[in-house]
Each structure stands twice: as C-alpha cells, then as structure tokens.
Amino acid sequence: MTSFTTPAVLQLGTDIGTSARVSTPVISFDQARELSRQYGTPTLVVSRSRLSRTYQTMKSELPNVEMFYAAKANSDVSILRTLFLEGSSVDVCSYRELQSALLAGFKPDQMIHTHPCKTVQNLMDCYNEGVRWFTVDCSGEIDKLVRHTPDVNVILRLAAASSSSLINLSAKFGCDPADAATLAAEAGRKGLSVRCMSFHVGSQCLNPEDFRTMLVRARQAWDECVAAGAPLEVLDIGGGFPAPYRTSVMSLSDYCHHLSVALDATFGDLPIRIIAEPGRGMCAEAVTLITKVVGKSVRGGLPWYFLDEGIYGSFSGKLFDYSDFELVAEAAEIRPRSACVVAGPTCDSHDVVSTDQELPELEVGELILVPTMGAYTSASASGFNGLDIARIVEID
Image 1 (cartoon, rainbow, N blue to C red):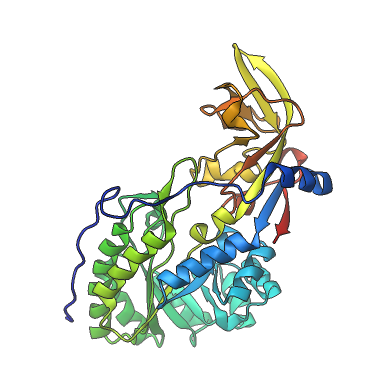
Image 2 (cartoon, one colour):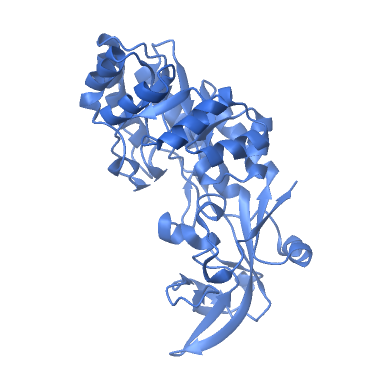
C-alpha cells in the first residue's frame, strides 16, 4: 500500500480559524419593497453575484478540485445557468434534474449521475441523453448497469461517518469501505469499469476534520480496489460544505483550505482527478426569501404572526433538512423585541415557522427577509392547501 501523511487533527472552534460566516440577506428592505411591488410575495430572490463569488472562492481555495454542483439542492435554471457560465459541471440524480441542467446550458459530458439506487427508467432516460457516469453501492446496482448500460463508467460510493454533519447521508447509501474491493472486483468480472470512488460525509458538515477522517479511509479502500484490478482515476469527495443559518459557520476560505491540506496529505501522491459535489454550500447563501405578514393575533398572552409562506413552502427545510432560518425584520435593532410565534399560511396547525425568535411588534403587510434560503427550500416545497409555491426572481 502506498504510504501517505496524516495531517494534524483540527479542533473545531480553536485552530480551524477564527473567521466565520453569518447569515445575511442578498437584498435590502428598500429593494424588497420594490421587488414585492413587482412580483408580490412570497418571492425567492437569487443573487447571481453572490452565487458567483461562492463558486470563485471554492475554485480559488480548491484549485485542483473540479466542481459538480449538486442540482438536488436547488435545480432552478437561474442557479444552474449562473454556475454553468462560471465553468462548473453538474451532479444530477434524475431525468428532471438533467433536463433543467440541459436548459441551463450543460452538456451530458459535464454531468455525473450520483443516485445509488435508480429506477430503470431513470437510468435509461439519463443514459439516452448521453450521461455516462453512474453510481453504485451494491451488487444489485452493479447488475442493473450490466443489464442495461454495460458501457458506462462506474462510480463506487463508500459509506462515510461524520461527527459534525447535520444529516447522515450514509444511513441510506454507501458500501462499507471494507467491502469496496470485493464490489470493484465483482463489477470488473461482469465487464464494468469502476473508474471513480466517491463518498459523502453528510449534509451541513461543520468541521472539515470529518473530511480528513474519511479521506484516510477512502485512501485505504482505493489502494485495495486498485490491487483488485479496478482502473480508478477519479476521486469524488461529495458535498457537505456548510452554510450559515441562525448560527455562524467557518469561513468558506478557511474550510476549503483545511480540506485542501487533507487532500494533499492523503491523495496528493496520485495523478488523479478530484471532483466535489457542493450543493447547499454553493447555493444556500445566494437566495433570500421575501415574505409578508398577513395576519396577527394574541394566543395565551403571546403574539402570533402569520406569514404568506410556511413549512409546506420555502420553509420546508425545517422539516426535511433540519434547518433553522433567521427571520429578519426591518430596523429590528432599534425596535423593542419580544418572544412570539411565527406561523405559515396553511390550515395545518403544524405549519409553524418559529417559536423561539424575538421580533419587534409586526404589522399586517410588513415584510420579513429570510436569508440563506437557496438550498433544500424551493426544491422540497409543495402546493399544499392549494397555495402557490414562491416565485423565483434573479437579480444582478
């Protein structure tokens, strides 16, 4: 086995850097009023310049890593088009995501398909469009490719542990790293070419040390797969880059720097391609929600404010993604604030946006801004109760 150096362990909050990212809107209240007059509310505002800066920072700090934006985080064409123009590639998991990527300008040879368990229809639709990189994590998926698309390039996904990630994506997918060589050898015997190894440390990974830990395991599995005959040439480190919500996170530059050091220490001796699949970390901060207070009452002595957007819409990330979004009222720093409940517009009593944020006394018609609304918000929104999904507007 090739030897490599293990980087020093990083302690979260101490030697990983003191700079931090906080959640900030991409528009002012004056801009919000103008946009709401034009488009109504709720409206999701996409800042192309904010998105471009995030992409450029990732590329600057990870110059040897190719970016494949994870379209599942937000497949809106405005976001995909901006990233296409920046030079990104794209990670898709379905034919609909592929269609959105094509509409934005991407070609099939700029795509990888990372769903480990695909329907045959999903597989064939994407294959027929020209996608040639597909993910597996078990014998059943290997056999599916052998039967239907034997000439594709195989991405073998490993399960990954993370101590700081909000969502464990390996609870559902990924093979045990100890079984990787066996699966790679099986795929080879059946005529498939395992050319890429991938993993995902989990969504909203707060500490880049978790990447380092997984990279050490992946390197061992990589060497074992090569010894078993797999023609590996690409390492896919997945996503997990965090975004700031009600709590700050490490600056993107610092985060990427520590990841770069870990990559050099574990795979720096190999002449391979390295790719990443940032989703949330790429798009979350580029979008701000404009929502309006449509009702108010007092219940049990506590103010209740009702918005025209809730957990069945853009706040769906509270349910499906465990995100906690900051509600920003105008001039809140100079207005008396108090405990309150903020609820959504549906008839469901479960549609409550916040119970623990102190806000000024709000009036019906007042606008609220919600930053960091780009990831797993509109992507998982529904039209429950017959309400419209928030429109999406691009700026700058």
